[in-house]
Length: 419
Image (cartoon, rainbow, N blue to C red; front, side, top):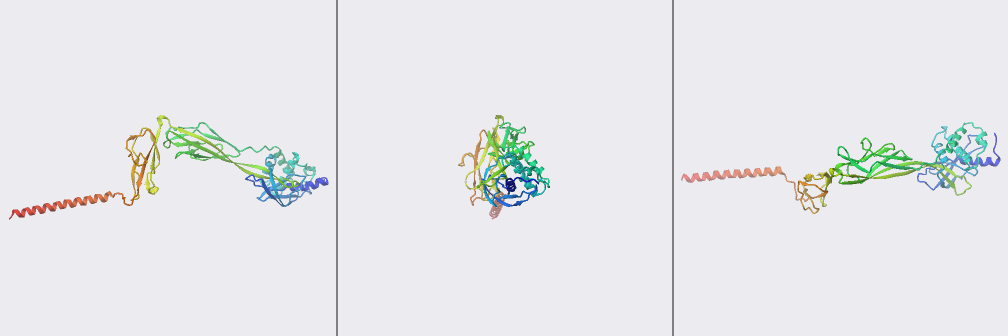
């Protein structure tokens, strides 16, 4: 078998060994430093002269050497991030060990990946030239040379990582009343995504009962990129004008070939694949405006004071209710409670509990009605059944007493007349 010249052979051996430093750098947070450990030596699967070092970062990532003309790092080496934008290296790492199975054997796959890193860098003049002995002449008993070349060819055609992005298309920022007049509904909204295929929708400052739905009207908040969504507000939950914001968010996952340099530049640089998440979001503001013929006014029920029975013991619950403008309004039924020592004092137009509401008054503008609880221990809910019984008993006693009086009077009168 042909040999590379003596100096080239030594350099190549060391470099190839270093090239096979498989370092698993999971830099999810774009770490600027890392520590590399040499975890062993791998024999060559092409020819007989190449023994390659195996490297891994302390956080478990496989790393690969890059500089054929330099020696491999020490057993433990601190390194600093220098770049992350090499599309060719990213392609090799994404399609090599440990992320893809090539031959179904981890040692072979790791060898193929390291060789492809050097071969690609050599062909693109980013490191010293790889010898013809390795690329052409040396024996290839395991049939790996073709796999190496396939990775190199893919790397040469690789494109730069697309920048993650999220855009939202809105036909109209106004919500319109549905045909059944139950909801104010937005136009359909769609997204265009780069770096992910799903997104989520959430609402801010939305009236109670507002929902996000798919185009079939089903409530939904998580969508595929090809799906559209819309927003629906209950018609009785809005005033004359109601605004809310819609937040569309997504997480894009990209991978980068991060290149690390030892402080001693006589050692090889190392490359490892790092996943990175990019949080994306867009906010859309929507408005629902009630037309004059559909105008609503709202009554907001407020309980004043600190005296309140437990909420689950009262009915109905205070809050806002909207009606057609001009409605002759009868106040909501007085709050009731299942606590005997509490009673509700009714609804008033002023917070100091003056201005008792008059039923039948037309509603022409938004208003607030105020009410208060009295929970003094001396207050009891009247027992009407017991009171009625007492009344009947008293009436009976009066009747009986009257009857007895009449009888006594007559007897007395009759006794006098017989004398």
